[in-house]
Length: 480
Image 1 (cartoon, one colour):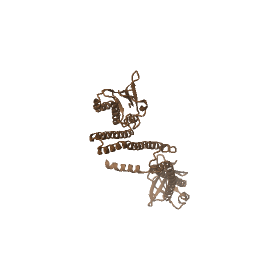
Image 2 (cartoon, one colour; image 1 turned 60 degrees about the horizontal axis):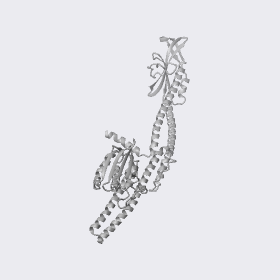
Image 3 (tube, one colour; image 1 turned 90 degrees about the vertical axis):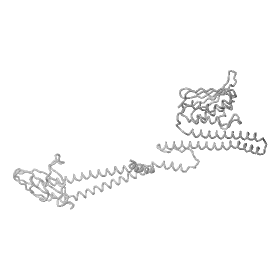
């Protein structure tokens, strides 16, 4: 089975390796050649039948001409036939000096009356439905070592002296028929070749014109600069190329977005990491000069390294969020299970600050990237723990909001947030406290929420007197 399938697979591979123009030409001209070849053969066969019919009719006319020169004496079995065949009966066959004609006249018993005695006697029978209004039969025979075409006419003969039946055989050699057949074949083939050439020329011109937009599009893309990812102009593209152009523009738009993100990431990384590295260098030099006790110097260096590590990790997380957001069709995940796993992971931080922690979740199924949901929950919970004072309260809830949305709310008892600052906290590297954060946590959360088509909001929770009791973080994601 494998050996039989290999040539077919190889043929398909070669076909796919052809250019579009070559495939169109082969796909159109090959069937056209088959159709024209069949049509040529069909026309040739029909012309041959018409030619044989015409020559057979002439043979019949000659046989009838001979029958007009017959006479009879006696009746039925006693009838004696006599024949005087004029040269005019043979003239139509010998005018071109190509074919020769022979005849034989006999009675029903095969007794020769006139003509060539060696011409084989007819032993056939008249067809049930002869093609002409006469008792005639046509057949092929061999005479004197040559193939001949024979017409047999059963002709009643009557006169004043008697009545009888004559068997008239007229044979013709095939030189003239063969010459006419060859001429018909040559003429038919010549006309069909001219027709095929015209069709091929038209097909080549049409294919050239039809594939011109493809070549122009290819040349336009090749002429572009390496960093040119602007959309391709599809106004002049044919309708069939519109999906390809639109898909190419979509890919280039995503590539442009990714390239812009990478450039921004490199720019931000180089800018943000420069400061902690410079501080770390200064602290190392100060420690080498013994400006501070070794323990204090190591604590300062450790704090700087910890902040730089946190910054690098969050920048890598931001880059991963951007990468995952380009991937489509994520698998369904349980948001409530992810939220409880993250809460369990950070429970030591909650216990360290003696927080009154409560979590209430309902089953929520989302089509989302599991890593992104974990990062979202971890960043928001870390921020809430950091800003909640010791022995404070931290509550987390997850429930369905309507038929197609899920709402996660994280409520702390921290100092809340200034309205002006709330509008800037979701921007990268904008932190409420530059000494305790890198300014990337909420930016990462906003990227994750937007990648899933949701929304995130920070709202101060106030009592009846207008005093801020804490901060609520509301995340709304669609359940798809």
